[in-house]
Image (cartoon, rainbow, N blue to C red; front, side, top):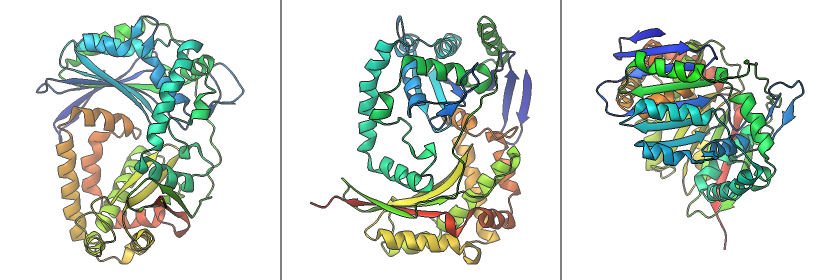
Length: 430
């Protein structure tokens, strides 16, 4: 078992790759009562075209199948796993993103028992046509619920503009029509391809004894038979520069909403530390330009172009990276126009100074250290942001090392006039 000391943040991380390929991280935090376990597979909603385990020809599966599989894994022949966690004093949950599926528990008691339950239920699929068909109605209702959420539709509206030919623009849960095509055999095909231990990560943080817990995990895994690991072959549409420049939608909203998107057309660095540095520098650039303490933000706020709903996010994952800026406003086109102009003219913006960057880096570090008080945050962020050998705990050094020229350079690389798109949502006309 490898042990890494992060003296800057006073954390010790234990790490081991088991013989079956499963990567395990343990982070003891003795002063906490709670323990949180997260078991993730590198498989999400965009992975719908691939070569199945043991086969040579690629197939395409129905949209929404990764999320459907997440739901079905909790159901076993002898009952529901949620109940079992409850009886053991733990709460459990799961979520599917574009590129990951994660199963988790939190508890203050019976950590080893709950961890064993987590490993066992994820590694023992049970699907029948009957249970699959029953689930279609439940997930169909969930899809409808998201359809009624204006901010969800706003987000997928801009993704549809930025990635019209890529599965990224498809709702993570799929559509009512696509999930109707899912069979038990499809679920087993996806499971055996993507739930190989070598494609998975287990992260446990909280009140734990690392040597003892690692021994429990080793024993659990060595008692199970897994087929030999196989490389996963995924297929995606060619990443073209095709972008829908503008679209709009009428919906049940009281005010206009806008979102401005920027698609990453640049080639990203392969090395983990450079990738984490790129992501951090972009975040610093947009905070300097449009963060809620910037002069640009305050000017637009005072002019009534934006309000407290305005925000932005930069998303970087395997296969894609993009930025989105959104909010509620009475002047959506003017708001989008001004935000776009500020971004395009970033090099000449008076907000982009060494002095402002120094202050922002201090603020970012303060927020980072504060967030480390949440074991849920640590587990989720750690597994979402594995950049090669670099981890969440390397972030302070990366933030410290970024200079103004790094921020400007990453802006020149990412910001491209051809990469913008606008999506507007208007109140329904009577």
